[in-house]
Length: 351
Ligand SMILES: *Cc1c(COP(=O)(O)O)cnc(C)c1O
Image (tube, rainbow, N blue to C red; front, side, top):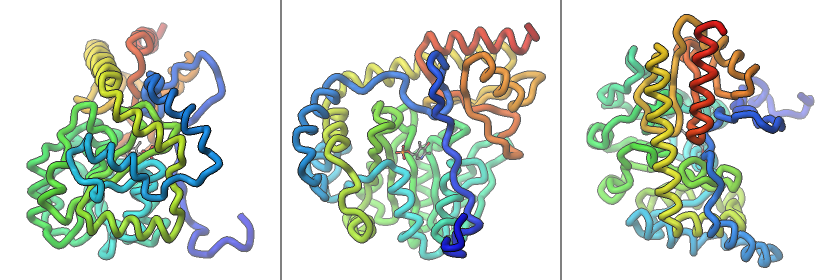
């Protein structure tokens, strides 16, 4: 740390991303990426867009906003695009938490980091003992509430009606529903954005649309809220979505058959792995995402994580009191999940 760093940032604890190791042959199940490459249409459109790289991108991302509007059944004026949904979340913490922020104790780690980064007071709302979210705990809160649905790292989802209940109970506070994993089995709140001016839905192309490396995320909300996000963006970096990424996004939305096929394969591999691990006496929460939150029998989460790593399988372990017994296993191909199950079987039987 240099002596020039702003004193307000000196105690900031940054988010720790999952490892991106250089090792080949490693089975990488630690950052919830899609195991399949982007659609061939994406590759073709990126090559075409590359010819235009001399030019700045369209700061309003018109073509992509139109494609989003068509896919999600909203107006283009209801769509905000950003450099990953992390950037959307950063803007929300920066500009739309006038009364602080409220979020679960076990949820996406970046919420706490952004709250600290932007000096937003955080209210932590503990999940129940079984990791489910109690919607009524949010009723009456004045803070901007952030709910990942389905949640990470638990994989559990709440129904749309429960979230609508929060919108109705808190008409003067904002609710942000982070739908990073919704395509793997959640119930989207996007339709509610037409009726509730206090709702922002965020999402990403990183998981279900095979584009983690492109960095593309979005928010869907009322026109007024989108204008607020644009205000922040245009006061920071109008070109936050580059040409290659914008072209990737349009193509990924167009190739619906590819999207469906990948999504189905991930869900099948998830259901296989969940039941195979349960047969080995793992405790596995019912997942609506592309990962499993699982606790091995007779072994700590940390020891299981380390043993898997030594066998070339990388998963994620969060060393916090409520997560330490578990690991988070991203869903890979069926072949990778079979390998995970086989290795897990050997580890817990001590071979
Ligand atoms: C992965 C993830 C994000 C961030 O997605 P990017 O678009 O890659 O920045 C946001 N929220 C949750 C809950 C996530 O798991």
